Length: 365
View: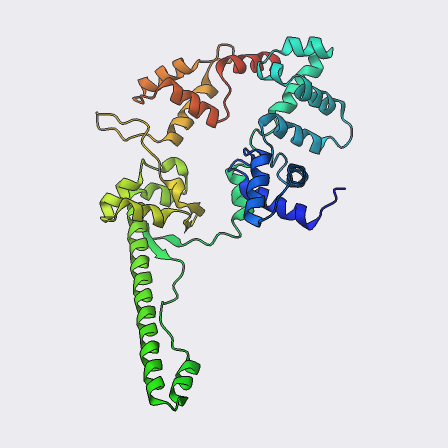
């Protein structure tokens, strides 16, 4: 068992705040120690940060707090190696001592150096393929935080029409504290009473001005959300992100007449409740990947990723398609994207390159 002091726990909480969206800690421990110490007004050693990081890495999901892919895989394997399983032990040995050869798919060299037979190697590779390269994915994030998310907007469907509202329906109003009124009335000195009344009235005026600003903000929020719904009706009727059309902040700004910075502030860190769940507004904005001059609809990155996945699923497994070949196939469908874009979306979808897919197919057969 780890010895968890209040100090280590506090640093661990700080480290959690430093994790990136995929669950990795990409900042160096020296930087974490310096920034934590600076924010708390005390020097913090790297060794304490290392202890705190171990605490974070004992949390769920397995692999959380990893600093690289190798550490992420090892953390997951060590978590499941409870019964001294020989395959898990062999897989740990491969990743710990032959990680470079593994990334280069040099299976023969790994077998030779570790004196491992082909059957064991295949089982180890199958186990590795089941590990998650990202300890923290969107589905994990949603499950962890959905109970804490309070959406600002709600979109409902009534008789096939979409309606937008704010989730907070409490009217904004100014209320006068009666205790202050009694104090003012009780004053005997007329001069001081008059000064108090003038000060009190100025405070009420300032409060009323704040109320007006908040009401204007609510009106702006509703108008922006209405335009988003008007631009994405298919998505709000299905809840499927693949139904999203290309939309950027400037599009919403142009339709509402608001400045793009105002639209950015309104949509930043805001959520909308729909019949299909809660969605982050920033995830509804997508640039057009390609746009045909023949009047066809523009294509979003999600739609391109889906097409790439479909092409890979239907390819000849013995002769997998290269990124250039996938690019040319998309061109025949009117989607013009660069080869580097294919690589980016293929990797985002977790699809290995053609040579790796070929080796995986060979090992599986």
